[in-house]
Length: 127
Image (cartoon, rainbow, N blue to C red; front, side):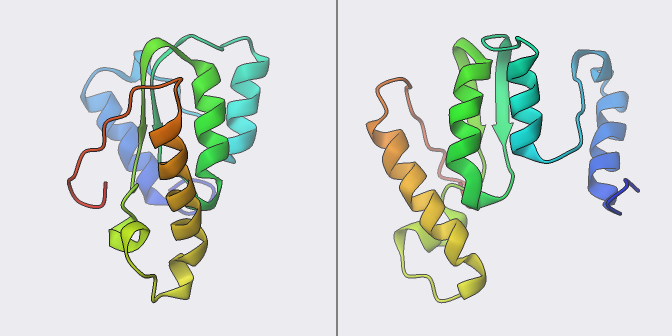
């Protein structure tokens, strides 16, 4: 288990070892915003081929903007859960998901209008 007690991160790292790609991927564990800020401060802007965003949904726009700085031209930013269990295009009956729902609705609108990117939404699971 990791320091926060989560076996998920450790399991994912073991899978990287098994796939023999661990030497190509650097794992950083910490708050997402601070981690992205550190990467930018380390002059890593424009060096990433792929960024996967799957963190607290309320800050998805912050992670997206920072990821845009990190990803190279023609790189890929994948954002998980953009449908948010259907809540982004329906009504949200569960207050537990309200913050994430509002944030992802706004992010989806922003992505749709953002001339800096080419967007593709995969309609599987919850996006």
